[in-house]
Image 1 (cartoon, helix red, strand yellow):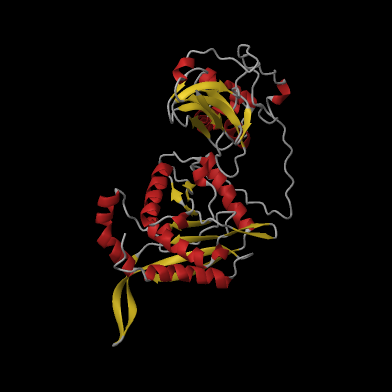
Image 2 (image 1 turned 180 degrees about the vertical axis):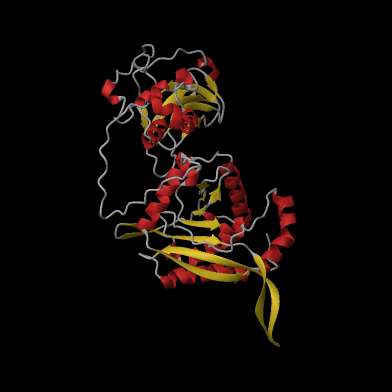
Length: 437
């Protein structure tokens, strides 16, 4: 019987390791292709590692609670003929002895409960995943509060959902549980202007930001501090594009089983413009400019919660219209359902945001760091426009839209930023009415 080595998969560019939360299969137990074998956690997301094919879990190479590097082997799975003969084999370690139980966590000193960083385990022995610890520390939740939570995970483990459900009630109930910890008042920095103190009036409703909104806020402020933003605007006559889509969208949906929205068409134009002007597809590291080989297009998507997420279409320059349309619909649908993986929201090299979805004619988008540019597409409106004809100028009703291009003026000058958005507009205006799909 042959066996395959299961490696901890890559889960995004910035994720280097994960913690083994719980094995879902025992050694000697059969596994099916795509069936979850082990639950893992990073500082961004909890997820599962599936079996790559049918077989038997021969050996676990790591234990619950272990921190594992991306690419590190975590298990051996037996495959092929004869696999069923070891289905009842006892679980043993390499020296032939029975597998030892996980060590009991060391007690945490009392003083660590109220102000120190959250450890992997509390005094009760509960395990806290990196994601739970990260949320707890960012929200100022103490070990005492975590220990008091009734977790819904295995053995009372506190999950991401448990801690997020606790946050809205924390302002009242949690206040009595949190110990008073003296904290030195921060000294205002002359270099960092302080936001004005807001005093709510009687009857005002106080709404605490959720974790995602805090992350978005921090990312937006960081982007404005990092990049001197400049925005160029172009108005485009997209009448041909609108007429072409109206003509083919029904046949496209019938043939491909996918709706054809304007977003894939915008992405195709942006990809072509990036091919012609690759210095838009760059990143900055200090004084070094990194020219990206791949064209990975992020598309900002609004969530039902009101928050924002940016799934990424990887190597969009290698996809045709059908491929881009399928990717757009798939990522947008799973974004609304909260089913995106860390890798699907990382690695973007250029971002598009469609403010026209909300009826806005234009916007001034903020760059999604570490990228250097972002395009906002406005609503398409029928407007009177002057057309030049061989017999003279005429006024006609045309489908018009604004494109807003924000770029990092450290590395993208007005000439390049302006030419780029003009080129995108030209590609949309010149969309051929007889284009095949």
